[in-house]
Image (cartoon, rainbow over the protein chains, first blue to last red):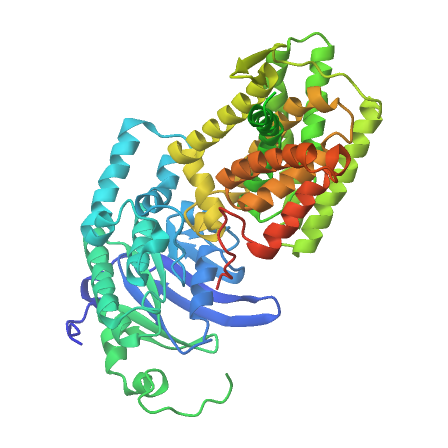
Length: 268
Length: 296
């Protein structure tokens, strides 16, 4: 796998350090407390990777950011509090979440899926010629990133391959013109080649549109390849944070997380 | 009358009642698609709408003005039912939701009795008397009218779902509510819209059937069973299936009533039950439905 060796933290890290601020975030499901107080921040335009073993709380972190699970503490996006909001309200604040398992509308065509992504800008009423033109321009933008989707635009989303569905899910999220893009395990169940292509597109989106991205991944190598910063979660706490390049070189991560040599862990 | 024209005669009459079953089945299917709920109170809501129409006509409003007013009232009523009765139990175990709709059934039935009493009322026939003679087969204007109205309702629903942005949003919510939320869609409002729409379509069936059955609070009980058979046969997820199922059930009912001596007019109410049983045994998802797949 050819990973870029340039340190991507330069350039992005210096601008507005606290675009997304997570402070003392606790979250869980019923009695199960998954997150035990997370603190991290993501600068505008950064790609932030959240890594960690199964059950560490990576998915829960993303779900707390987009309102799918309740959290305690504080999460601010550009100064606006995200905690306590519903997913639809979070979407209105510019958070686009691509859930684990993709969440495409399988009975709708590819193009209809993308139109739903633009729902917030078109609303239930079509907002005039200018609004429609903007949506068409956005469709072109998405088809530019994902040429396969253009070829399949009239096909039902359910008939696409897993990789194409993941592309569609990301495309739909981008139709929202989000300021924060949350990606939950984009590589799940996909062939390595497809995954690498997908990550390259995410990198391109980040570079061309300055969209801030938080990506949760099992495949640490891939995620670290496009990330500026990375955080390693274990049992609901951050155990390691730093520039992606540094974490990639760090032997401790390789040992604890990448599974080069598996160390016995105390509690699961 | 030859046996062929006699058969055709029965089929035409079957299609007439089938169209009524189809429209109530359509209402059932709409709600099931959006919420996964089987609404046992659908017939009673339609009956309540029919009383509204009756009241308007009785107070001097012309029928063709009373109809749109009734449909508008039904739409608002359906939205209220979702917000007040169904929303609080959304996400509760299936049995809870079923019991709530059964409770709504009893409540609406009693409410209608309380307001309008249980005595039978004459409902105006909106279509002209007389019939068309098609090669010896007598087609009543009222039968044609019923089929026509249901066809128009279907056409409007098709346009709404396939060619408007509201329809697209509604289909998205029916398909994947969680993803719809993540795209910023206010799912609660869309569900209210779905219930309003279903109540409106149901109201059409009540108004169409009232001149035939006469209006009383238990009028829709039998129709609901036929509609269940229609929706089961067509598939509880498929609007097209509901209509095809409704027409089939209507024709099956008339034909067995006319030609199978042991069944006759008294036992033909058993026909929908046999259809439900047979479909559930042979093809539980119905003709046009998709086989249930557990979501991960």
